[in-house]
Length: 232
Image (cartoon, rainbow, N blue to C red):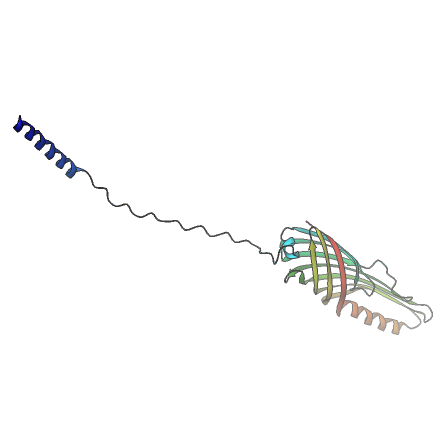
């Protein structure tokens, strides 16, 4: 019995050693690689400050305004309408139509001016902008002096390069602004109709040509075009 027990223990020992030698060894696992976080998407427009006109413009696509008063391009007060499309919060493509309702300039002169322009309003900062564009203008002027027996008049049109500076403020959907100063330089002009009557036709013709050249050929200016409306 003693020899039998020693034999069984010897068999169990050999079996356990063989089992340990045949057990597969698991290689060390490679360290896990960490995926870097995705970069934060950049915003197409970063507002200047919260609650500013610049931030409010970021939410708009269209603008409609009315100009109740302005000086130029007519010698008489002008009024107008404008429509704009927001290319981005700092750029607006704008169409303006202005003219004068009261045609009587003084006892001897009547003026009628209509102007249509297309421009790019580019904001610099919160509300200040520059506005280059192109303008087409129709002009009619009549002069009548019964005492001097002198009458003349003309119709014409011109096309020119325009430029103005101003400020535009945005309060929710309410838009308020002003073109403080601007000018238009003609590069195309045409006097389509003219007439002279009276006792001194030479003087009438000279006056007509001087006045029409100033209106159609030269540089004209505008001031304080106030406007208000909505943007949405």
